[in-house]
Length: 93
Image 1 (cartoon, rainbow, N blue to C red):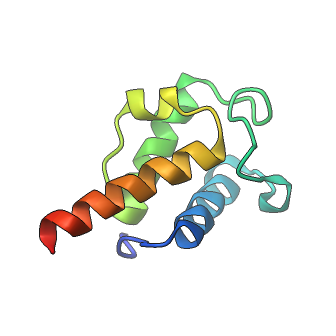
Image 2 (image 1 turned 90 degrees about the vertical axis):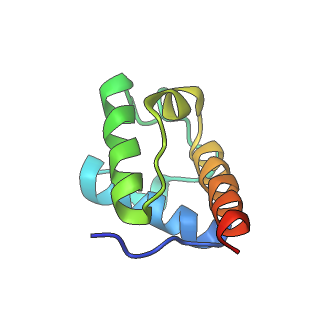
């Protein structure tokens, strides 16, 4: 169920935190933009694939598995999604 594309970094971060809390049983209060997916959250490549799928389902923005694998922190994921949102908005005007 897509809730529409979040446009601000704050909205994007809120969505990512909600996904992590709901799907990966992570306490959102313990997550910051500097939280490392592998070192702090013990994510592996399958978790990255799942996260990419949940982000796409929630926002309608497709992230490749490679996109997620290259991202080390929550902040990097938020920034990548924000860049994709800006590009999408610019294309659709």
